[in-house]
Amino acid sequence: MSAAVRKRTTRCGVRKAGTNGTRKAVKAAKKADKKAAKAIQKGEHGRITPGNAKKIIGVAKVVVPVVAPFAIHAVSVARERYERMRAHRLGVPVDQLGSFTGRGAALHARIAGDGEALRELREQSASGEEAAVAEQYAERTAARLAQLTSAVRAAERMPAQRRKSAHRAVDAELGRIEDDLLGRFGVATRHTK
Image (tube, rainbow, N blue to C red):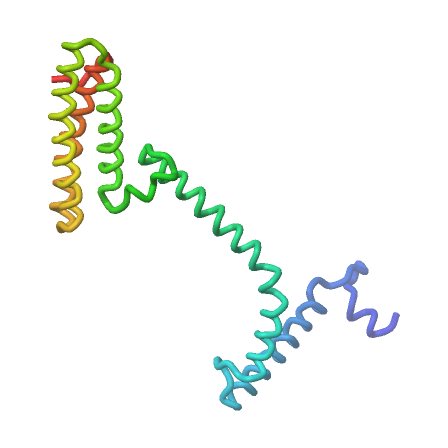
């Protein structure tokens, strides 16, 4: 057996693990270190050079036209999903989402929903006396909802702690209005006072 063959094998004839791969890794690391040292010596380390810029532009000319349509599609899908999620959370259709913005968006959406429920209450009360009572209630409640809308808008410009306090107060008032509305629609609630 020659000396070269003995170096590559152990007593059992199995090749030693990692000697050739280790040598290649060490050689590649030395080469990279030399290249980095040369760039540092030239003052080009960490800077964009004209050569590097040309390489980047060349790669971009090939990659951007291929990747851009996929990226645009992914962004539009993500945006659509986000808007659907926000609309679902607020309880409004996606096309009306732009009407409810800011920190009080959820309260504005609830107020709009309560206003719609008031319109339906007016339409459902058909008899003369019942319609008159429903109309008076709807007018009072609509005026109160307008005040609550103004309060939510005013709270937008308040410091965080006061805004949260105002939003809690509006939320509690909306809860009472909604309980009363549900009672007028014939739905029993647990929170009715």
